[in-house]
Length: 169
Length: 259
Image (cartoon, rainbow over all chains, first blue to last red; front, side, top):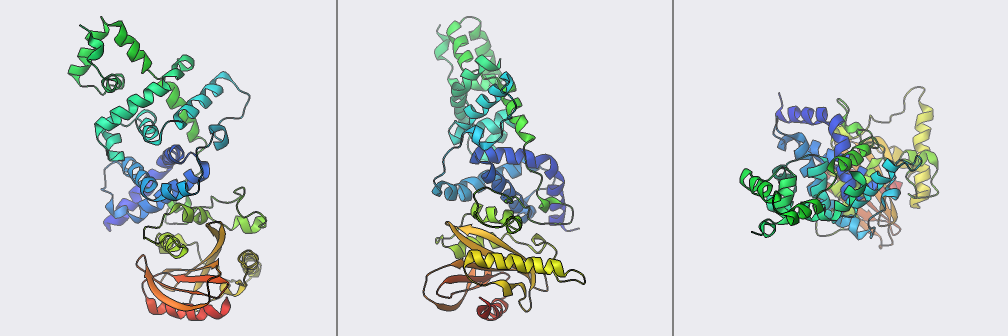
């Protein structure tokens, strides 16, 4: 059987569970729903195109997160930055539940805004480590940076996010 | 001993995350028993991670559906741009519904070559096409005249947008028509008409407004694909796809009188 077909099938099979997570990470990178969808879809197309590079039986999720990261850093972000569009308030992203402002909803908004306000490098680490649950080493592999850099970015991020515990604990 | 100075914030972060080695973790544990400053520092690095995860997990429910390109035995670009606010206002709803995620992908794909002109951007996008990317061809079928008329109407609407008549692009000898899309490049409309050759090779004809003086077709290779571009004095046109320059040149000659 064609090995590329095998890996392509493996990628397809993983998508229903993986795609929402990819989109969520894309949203954290781009801070915009439309761009996030663009990036997630482009990543999927690229994954199909490069399926022969995927090593069967290894972690598809990490492979695709890395692919998305590289796509964002090397190709897409430059163009998006040229458009001059900056960060968008989390309310404008349209992800906040618009039901009456319960305390929990207010806190969710606060959390999303706080993470969204982090510098991109810290935000990537927070998303991959704290939201996606990757270890330092796995996050370092995805971002292609040393583990020490992950630690440093996370400690900086923690200092900025620490105020949340007053409401979240 | 002032153990507070012994540990960096990175150390404490690793400790909080369960990533500190055993020796470091033991040292911090021991120091915490006697050093209130260290306890304060640790508290200042403490984040409600469960709440944070919960907030982001709630986002998953808002995720768009998995693109169609992952449907079994089918690769087709999803229609994500449908209804996007502010995108080419004034277009009819039906026409907007015909614009697919490809438009947004075009904006997403950054040209890798030195020039960032529209030819390279289109080439970067076109290189992602595989035969399965295109929907089943939109052929005229018995009893399917309404559909055919619908595609012609789409091309007529796109003609208004691009400022030149492209209605005849529905039928190009040797090519199977798949769809016409409104894309955008630097604030200007860009029409992509997607076809396939009999062997399935994707071919695209792209048109942008351009005030460049009229130029004859120029054969070139873009991103490894055969291409031919020319300008009419009011528009730039690109034919691109596959590796057979002869076929692309022939298509260019066929299409020139149609635009």
